[in-house]
Length: 201
Image (cartoon, one colour):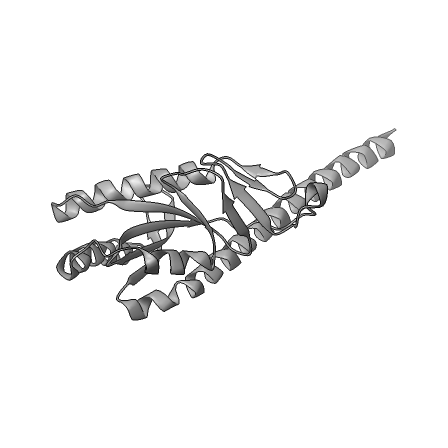
C-alpha cells in the first residue's frame, strides 16, 4: 500500500512539474516572439532618422509597462505598440498573412481576433500625450499605432488608431504633413530622453 501511495504521489508531482515546465516554455516562446517583432519594427523605422525623426524604444510608462516605440518628428508624435502573431491557415481559402481592422478589433485570416491591441495603443498614446503636455507646457497630440510585423492589414473603418504592417509604419509617418516646429521636436525629444535615462536596470 505504501508503495502504491508513493507511486501516486510521484506521478502527481511529475505531472505538476510537466505542467509548470510547459507553461514556462510557452511564456519564453511568447516573449521571444514578441522581442523579434519589436526588433523587426525597430529596423523598419530606421529610414525615418534621415528625415529628421527621433525614434525611442521601450519608453517606460507609469508602472510596470512600456511603449514599444515612440517616434517624434515633423509630422508629430507616434506611440507604436507592436503585436507579433504567428500565422495559422486562413479560413475559407483566405491567405494566412491577411488581417482586417474594423476600428475596434483586429481579425486574422484564421478567424482569431485581437480585441485589446487598439485599446492598449490608445491608452498608451493618451498617457504619453498627458505626460508630454505637462512637461513641455504645450498641448502635445500623440497618434496611436499598432504594428503587425509580417501581416497585410486592411482597414474596414476609420479609427483614431492606425493598424499597419510593420513595414507600413515608416512610410505612413513619412507621408504625414509637417505639424511640429524643430524647437518643439527638440523639447519633446528631451523629455523622452530623460524618461528613458531614468530607467533602472
